[in-house]
Image (tube, rainbow, N blue to C red; front, side):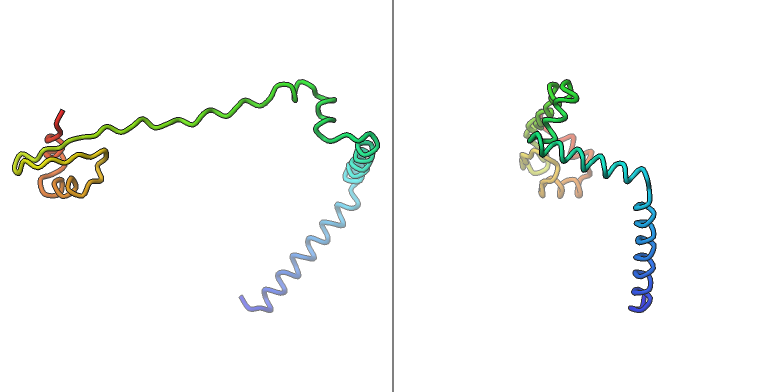
Length: 121
């Protein structure tokens, strides 16, 4: 997109946003909400109260029943050490996972099902 086209698109988007802003400025509901907010902030300042204190006054049950504590993190159970014995060479491999270099080589050479059968109890 050329710089000129990019400029025109941004200018058009700005005009649309300005039109939307003008519509909102003339909205009676928005004017009432702004007026309410201003009066509420004035009252809060007059009585030196914060938002939490006002919520506690208006809805005491909400503040007394605290949010439930987050569940403690589940700890993974420790992985068991598995020992594989190659019957052809007598070599032993001890691993906690299947990502062992020697075990992968055996599985590639002899097949995964064969190597899995070499697992010692």
